[in-house]
Image (cartoon, rainbow, N blue to C red; front, side, top):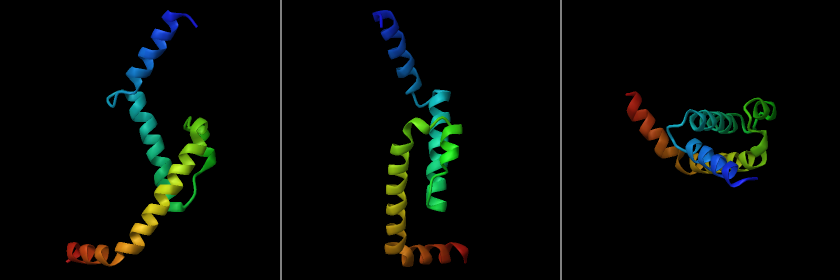
Length: 92
């Protein structure tokens, strides 16, 4: 790879890693969607990973999704009484 190509690729990656970049936002939304599905259903839809272009990071995404799911489940079991009180107060 030439120095010019390397510089071009480096600048493209830096641009994409900016929070305001549309590609960054799109990938972020797709990752969030898959993690939400994991939290709601307890598993990741493998077929959606490919269609979202996330099949390359499927192992990492599944690992972090399972960790978040476990953490949320534990948090809910520990703090369910507090959450019930807060929700009851909000409803009334």
